[in-house]
View 1: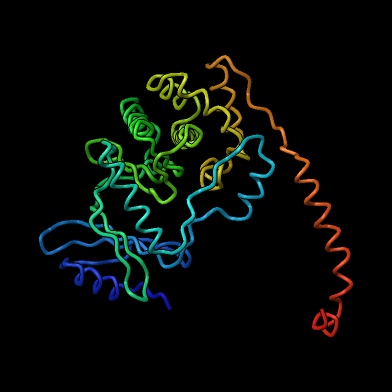
View 2: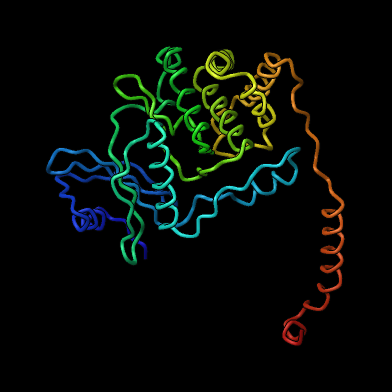
Length: 305
């Protein structure tokens, strides 16, 4: 069993040259990662993310929704194992930090033999963006957040999980970007446009449609925002982005309308991508099921087949 107890994590840190004076779990569910906070004997504060199984991938519901989308949505990176996931996130975080993006420095990425994989970062004291009241999020902070998104785009890094939970605001009121699990280096313009759409939705969930739209047009060139309009529709968004507007689904339509109005464009319509190859696949698959199902109705027939 891929255990992730405090004792196991403490042993891993000591084996890697750290001397934790304090170590305690702070978050984590039965299927997601466990998060620990550690303080070393030298006084350094660390955040340890323990990945017990490769769980961060696009689910079947997201893939099914993409089949109906009126645009092409690129696949997320294929993460084959917890170790691969941790190393991928560490690599993208280091690349982003080198490009000037404000993200907590990566200290270590390792695997515990037959146990889980660990990602260790320095802790940035602060609060998650979604924990702040709208009045606590001033225009200067919004501009700084878009500045970080712009740096990611200039470095051709697509984050693809720009939720309000992945933005930490420190004691100096500076934003830090977390969560590079789904990120890609050398990203296409399409993926970078998705990032802008995701951040627009995340900011809308905190400060509302008008302030979110004001901030992006105040900070970014309108031509850079224009491609993001296409992705402001439910079928183009993964659940982790849409869930931020839970109970306020109309905000997505309002945001799309507002951005389209400022760009002098029309809201993107819903156009199912029905292709001849899709219809042919359904017909052939249905015919195969119709012909084969009677042949496996009983166990003897199944064994004969």
